[in-house]
Image (cartoon, rainbow, N blue to C red; front, side, top):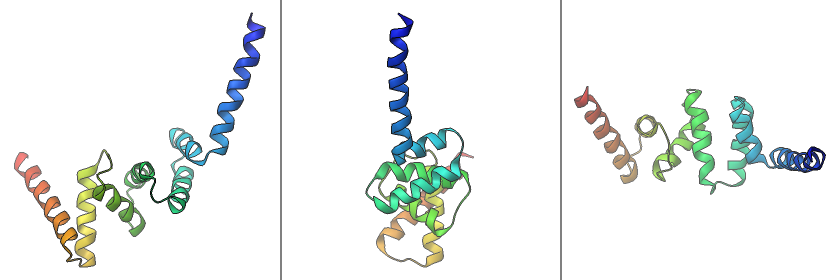
Length: 131
């Protein structure tokens, strides 16, 4: 009996390895799971360049940027999409403040920027009142 199961297990194992190896998003998720954030980040950035409409990639890339304490223009653009499109994100309030700061520094005065800045200020006031 064990000899008949072994080929099936090996075939399944090779299929799983093949999918992870040749599917960039799965490979990036695997690298992220293994703690190889830098390699995963490069894959996610590449995938977003090709498919900016894949919303699930923003959360994953945003998490990498957030945990790496990146606040450069590239990271802020990803945070901006997460906030605007209400993509589930563990540190939403923190990146909301970062995007609001970015808008203030850029001198944005459009209604969307003002709305987001007001929202960030309201959340900060509520946080300070709780403290």
